[in-house]
Amino acid sequence: MAKKTEQQGAVELSETLNKSEAFFLKYKKPILIAVAAIIVIVLGCILVKNYVLEPREQEASTVLAKGQEYFNAQQYDKALKGDGAGFTGLINVANDFSSTDAGNLANLYIGLCYAHQQKPDWKKALEYVEKFDTNDDMEISPASQMALGDIYANNDQLDKAVECFKNAAQMADKQAEENTNLSIAPLALKKAGIILESQNKKAEALEIYKDIKKKYVNSAAFQDIDKYIERASN
Image 1 (cartoon, rainbow, N blue to C red):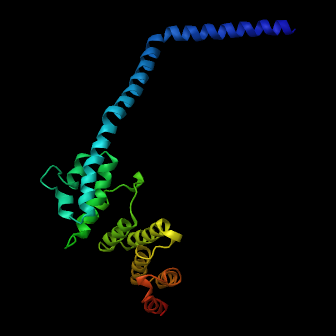
Image 2 (image 1 turned 180 degrees about the vertical axis):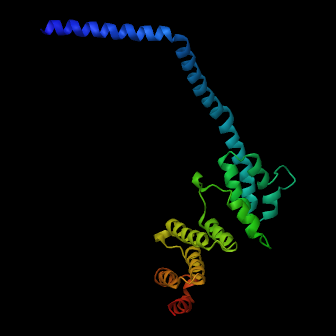
Image 3 (image 1 turned 135 degrees about the horizontal axis):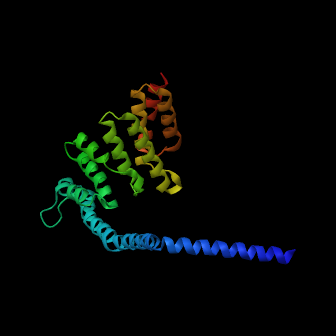
C-alpha cells in the first residue's frame, strides 16, 4: 500500500514538473523579459542612489553649511541672498536642491531669516516654513522651534504657535542638565500661556504658569510669574 502511494506521488510530481516545464517553455520569452526588466530597474536604482542622489545630497549639505554659518552669525541678508563670493544664498539652495534633505532644511532657515530681520517679514517667513517638511526628522534646535512659534503667532495661527512653544520647552529641557533649562524653556512656556489667555483658555494658561513657578525657580521668567498666575485665575 505504501509502495503504491509512493509511486502515485512520484507520478503526480512528475506531471507537475512537466506542466511547469511546459508553462516555462511556452512563456519563456516574456518571463525572461520580465526578469531582465526587474534586474535593470534594481541596478538602475542602485546607480541613481550611488552616483546621483548621494553626491547631490552631499553637494547640497556643503552649500547649506555656508548659509548656516551666516545665519548663526546673524548675517541674515547674506544667508538669504548670498555673499557675492561663491555662496548664492539659501533661497537658491532651496530651489536648486529641492529634492534633497538639505534643500528641505534650507526652507526652514529661510523662514527663520525673514523672522529675525530688523523688520521681520512674517508672511514670507510663514511661506517658507510651510514648505519645510518636518517628516525628514531633521535636528531642529529649541531656539528654532521657539522662532517657529513666533512666526505662527504673528500669522494668527495660534494653535500651531502654542504647539511650537511647548515643543521648544520640552526639547530645551531634554537637552539641559537635570532636564531643566532656565532660559528657552520657561520663556517659551510663558509665550504659550499668553496665547492661551488670548484664546480665553485661562485654565490651560494657568497650569503652564504654575509649572513655570514650580520648576523654573531660578529663571528670569519666574520673577513676575505671580502676576500671570493672578491674571489667569480671574
